[in-house]
Image 1 (cartoon, each protein chain N blue to C red):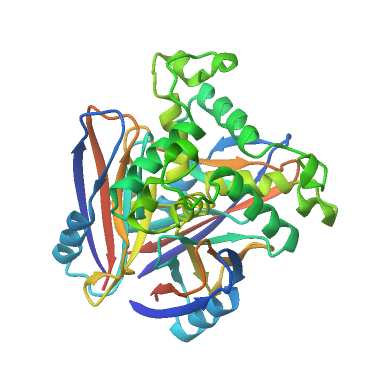
Image 2: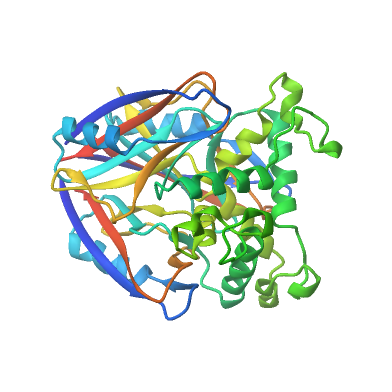
Length: 144
Length: 144
Length: 144
């Protein structure tokens, strides 16, 4: 069984945003020389996501607006006024932990004949909900 | 390491609906002759899901009603009136991309002694949020 | 290819709660003697989740409050009054099937040099939404 490990480092200038990392993952698959196998791609952080969807600007803006509605940002720590108890730790990212749960931590992608086995529009994204610092994405590939 | 790949094609007559694909996945596992391994099942599309839950009619109706509440259908593209920017591309499926994120893209299931290693009520579903055309589900199995 | 299977049994005294199972999964990885591979951890039930996030008490309370807002508990079966059709089966856990979809069924974690390949704050949780009885979590490890 072959295996390959690679870590991407991302640094988004704002709190939130999406980065298409499909090319980086495809390069890791090529470097692995795995022909048939599975490729795990996960955020190593708990306020960001890795997910698969369409690379379309309107959709990305829709997602951010929607996530803000489902888990609104608040610096506060009082749930009665929209705050998060998590913020009593001194953090202000309580809501980012919630957005990450909606969008997911990881994707597992099939590798077939040495390539990511994708449908037409599938693209892998890193989703940031508490940026402005270095974050890491783990790529782990196993197969033959 | 053994590997096996299979694609299911589904065509739902309406916009939304759920199809139990457990039997198809079980057949793919049998065809793979893998005794111990992992089975990835994912939608190859970005407006549909693969997920595991209960095969119960009431629950399926509950899910559709709930998803409609979390991400209501709109043909519009103006967020101020409930539309999705994604729909400015000429699509009317902005909300389907959101429903898919809630229900997920994929499941990974253990294979033990040649069979899907499931709890009592676990069943694999394809969840459609923008149907009325052919869609594909990928099954990728690796193991020994 | 090596493989290893282990089942954890959990029994939460209340309807809902979170249990950090990272230590149990790490022990399974050690027992597997897999150095490089993938570790699947999934709930074998359809009203509970396995997910990765921060082991922080405030956040856990935030999650429960948030999930209750997204999918409120009701014993009723009439959607017009907040009930779930699923409850017409005699169950009262319709909402638990919804909470589970938000938090997810499973995680897949990389194994590198014989250990869970984690970011600093990643911890694996069992999330219960319909407790007061024995529930099972499956750990399946493959690799070399």
